[in-house]
Amino acid sequence: MADSKVEDLRLPAAVIARIVKDALPPNAAVSKEAKTALARAAAVFILNVTTAANEYADGNKRKTIAATDIYHAIKVLDCEQLEKPLHEAVEAWKADKSAKADEAKKRRAEKKANDVRDIEDM
Amino acid sequence: SSPEDRKMAGSERESFFGSESGASSSSPLHSPSRVSEGGESSTTGGSAAAAASSGVPLQQVRKIVATNPDVLPFTPDGLFALAKVSELFVEHLIRETVGLHDNKVFDYGHLAETIQNDEDLSFLHEFFPTCMTFEEALRRSQEQASEDE
Image (cartoon, rainbow over all chains, first blue to last red):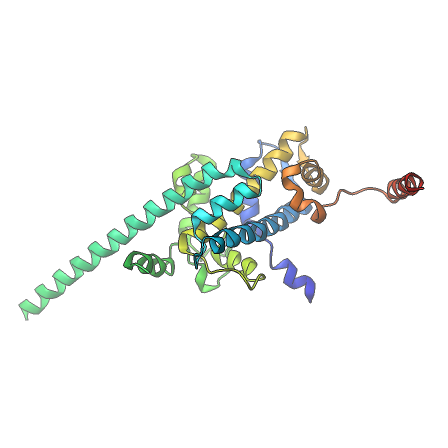
């Protein structure tokens, strides 16, 4: 029973498979055991980053963990080479989110205008 | 919190990540945008699309984080950053393993060796021991014993 709980902490197999496929040269392969190990390593990594990020946020008297805390945490864990691609990904995500929010706002405004027109037609 | 934060929290519940429903992330019903982004990144190298999403489901990240009850809550960008960096970490680990070995097939032993030989990965050392035969382990413990005398 304890084992099934620990197993839940791995990243999903499909995600690992995709990362591996993109990172390997053609014709190379990774064994099932190695993929399982990668999934577990990722879980341990997440736990370590979380702890470090939490300490940093808390130390700065903040109540939530944000992306800046994650950047700091990976520096602390000697994974600085990940910082630049991470930063780019977070910025792209933010841009995408704000574009979606703007779109939703526009749709709501358009709908409101349509609703008003319908009422006037009655 | 500012209206902008609330807006972001609200949109996180929308379908962009879709992991709040608790559905399995590998099911075809789950987040069609992620499936097509995966296809893009492996063929056209559409890194912008791939970078803006994380293949790692946020629900799974939350589950892992929840094993530590004393952690502060995440902002949406914080959770995304955590999910994304874990993906980048796996990529880093596999690339390092590939770089250190001239193989066609990589197994657990290659990964463990990579981890053990990298000081920056010391937090993983106890989780990924290298494999050795019983004879080798016995020999080493005997060596250790004679050194200690």
